[in-house]
Length: 140
Image (cartoon, rainbow, N blue to C red; front, side, top):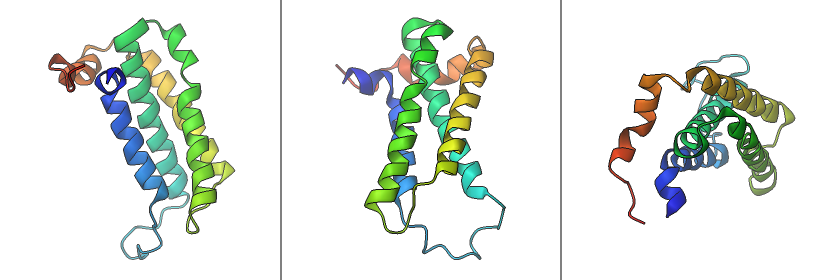
């Protein structure tokens, strides 16, 4: 329950990415979505940027308040991205694991790290991240 209480935003993003990574998108017709070159790479970048940003910021707020310790947890979103690519390759017949997707994931994670470096002392972002934690979501 400790992790659910401290990292509920990160866990929600993980659930969303897992669902989006493993659903069958073949049923979407091209008419529904605009054709943008390399749109899937942009989506990968944004998903992992969001995951890493929320995770690193929650870690920064709840634990060590030093950026040095945040660099140690960069590996966790990266490992999760690799796991999702492997699951797409092995569990689904309609998705494929791709090194370019992993590169987009890694780029999003690194961009999130630099965003946290820049925004870690921003009052608005801190209030946004702490808002639900004034009242605990789960009781331990």
